[in-house]
Length: 71
Image (tube, helix red, strand yellow):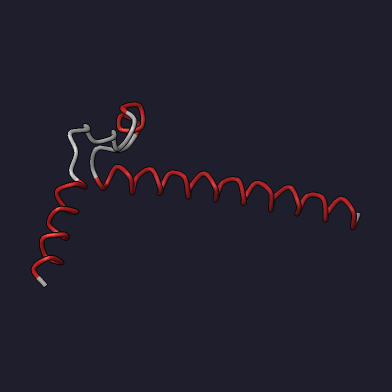
């Protein structure tokens, strides 16, 4: 039992190294990310509005095509 504990301690210490940790993210990506949670929500809201505008435009175009075909 003591040998198992000693072995686990040695393995835990052996896993530690002097290497610096890898960077978590690019600085460019960090600058592009919003600084506050509500900024992200505002971006999502604007994206949803843009999508809704596109859907409305396609629906209007389709309605025009249907009217042209029925005339």
